[in-house]
Length: 384
Image 1 (spheres, one colour):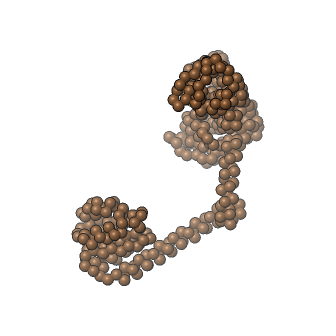
Image 2 (cartoon, helix red, strand yellow):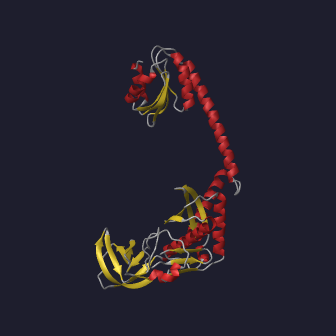
Image 3 (cartoon, rainbow, N blue to C red):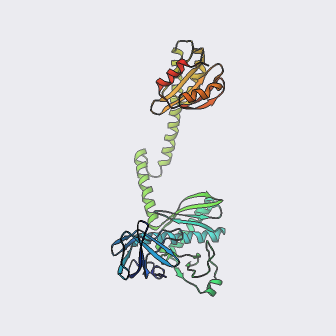
């Protein structure tokens, strides 16, 4: 069994230990020490980062109470080593994990929902709950969580005796029978947990719920705490500054300006569409009537304009009228009209021009992945 120094002191960043085993594993070596301050991967949280005698520790795992440290170089058994945990990253995770206990304790007490999933990643964490939270619930939970931070409540970690554990009411994602470590946020939460935590809620810093989605019949929250919450605020502030400069709008007026620009853009799109349709119909009028099939390329036409052209174009030819929009690099959308018989020919047309689509006997539409020349040459010989 490895002595878990991180259990006794979550703020121990440097320690000395003896190598008791080392063997090749995966892309390096698994080093087992008599004791360690490195927290191993578990409970939805990645293992600590750091070094052993300056050699990077790339992964930390635990199995049957034995902690292994993955390194790119081997260590001799019996060697005394100095381990250094990346304190900044450890503390970031402690802020977030302690924040998760605060949020989950409040959700449980308010709504009686269980925390059924947890993942602490780089920059954010997610937690899954067994029921749905409304917008009002989310605001209340966030308010109460930050109030708990301001009150700087103590956080205690301990291993209760069997009798103490039997009398204790606590949250746990699975049944535990021995060596149960209990983390208590005073007045907020009592939960089984193996991870390092901050000493008090004041060290968590801000707790911000950044997203909430429905998840497997419940709710998945994305939450940022402490330094991650600060990084989120700074990123949002930079976005706000950029948008303020882009729209020439002061803070607080960005959304109304953006909303107006969106409406103006929609009006322009509609006007552009009308102008495009009028231009297409003028080009159609200028086409001389002919025997057989006729192709008309309208590079930027929308679907409505293509259909209008195809409807009018059937009067200009005795065969099929083909309206195309697009270019050789990206392909072409098509609308084809005829006086009948198109449905039966659709498979052959699409097969010849690497296309897809369908419709009725008098009109089909879809797309071709072929050049303009190949398409037009095909319809010169096409017969219904």
